[in-house]
Image (cartoon, rainbow, N blue to C red):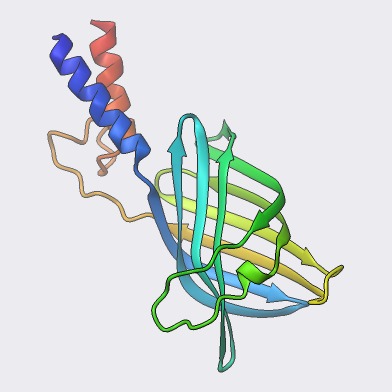
Length: 184
């Protein structure tokens, strides 16, 4: 019985350590002018804190594309309510160079400390993020608002793994199994 518990606990830990990738619409508004694009943001939990990664962030407007870079906000504590986790960040961030093929110049690394206020709500299936980047006091003189809503691909349920019957095999099913084992 202990072997079964250890195997299930290891499986649950490996699921928790994996990043969830949410794909959806990213809207960027700069000084009141908006553009939209499809992108992916990933969130993963690591030692009780969360990491949010918006990699290869690109600004697209009309016919112009500008590489910004990777916005990585790590080590954020979460609160939970109503089936959602919430993470918030308010501080400076260094934007790293991206690695998307075809982008020759990444502006982010040259910006230095970028003031960033981020608020995100998420669960296993959906992510909603709002980011304010206030560059009004810099040479750019821009207020940048980033809004994202995306969904994670669902895992098709197998009859023997969909413990709660919601049509998806996910961490909730693992938790039910672990709780059942612990109660026996």
